[in-house]
Length: 109
Image (cartoon, rainbow, N blue to C red; front, side, top):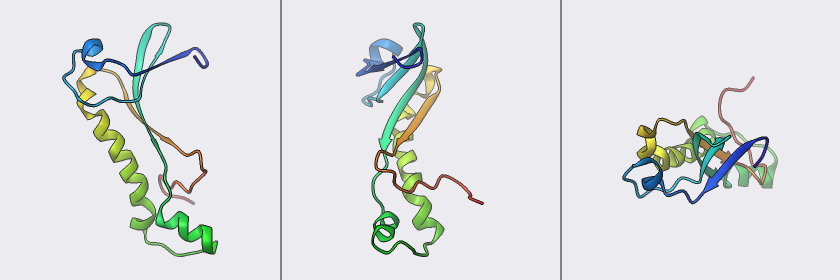
């Protein structure tokens, strides 16, 4: 438990919510016994941009090269969560970045 939140892992989604799914999202998050959200966690992995910048410290890249890896990560999480959309809880994609890789998620200024 962190900050009053509860995290359940290895939830039996069929028994708990009556959904017919083979998918197994990572966490059911709750607070004070009330279910709040279903979360799927994906770790950010190295991309061509990360590898290039590690070697050269500068570079020029197309928006597709920069943005597509993050978009694919979110898409994989969304696919994992899709079968639970009728449960009535928020479905949350969590992108973990323990290696502090570059993660472009939108426009920068």
